[in-house]
Image (cartoon, rainbow, N blue to C red; front, top):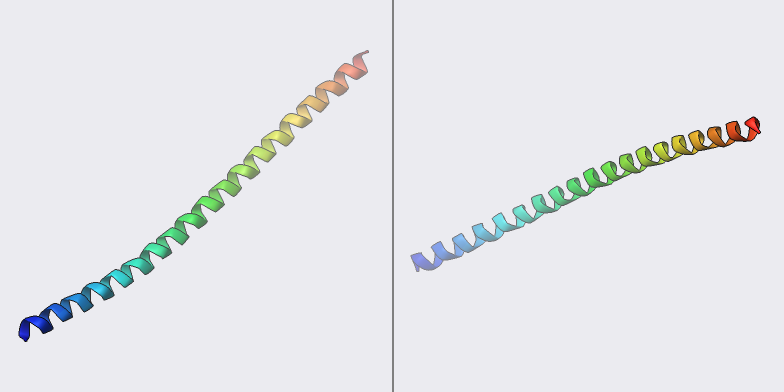
Length: 69
């Protein structure tokens, strides 16, 4: 009978420990998702800014060529 209670308590402790671990795993996944989203957003903004700058340079060159003729 003592062994039955010991194994029951061990099973309960493992179940509680695994439930807490799942919550931390979900929180970690959410945190990583937020970090990836913010990094992707920053990269997208940087690429857009570079593209806008390149477009302005090309437009400037096109205007210079048009004015030279």
